[in-house]
Length: 100
Image 1 (cartoon, helix red, strand yellow):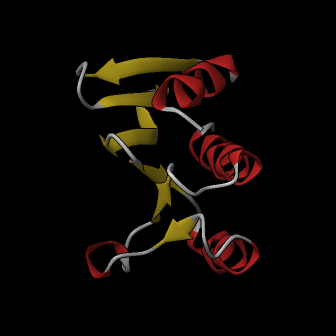
Image 2: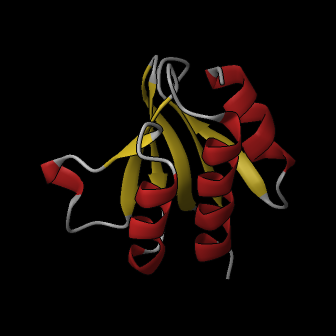
C-alpha cells in the first residue's frame, strides 16, 4: 500500500480530514488522530489498546509496537510489507475509536 492509497482510504471515511505537512500528512476525524505518515514506509495508526494485540497477532508482518509506543493507543504499520487489508483494518479501528 502506498501513502497515496492510505490517504484515499482514510479520506473515504466520514468526517476524516487531511492535515499535517506534505512530507508527514496525517488524517483526523473531529481533530482526533486516525493515522499519520511517519516516514515514507511507516504509518502511525491509533488503535484501542484492547484491540492492539489481536491486530498484531493477526498481521505480525504488517505491524509493530516500538518501545516508545507501548503505553499509547498506537501501532506502526510497515507499508513496504503490510497487507493492504491489514492497514485498512487498523485505520477502521482508529476511525471507530476516534469518531465519537
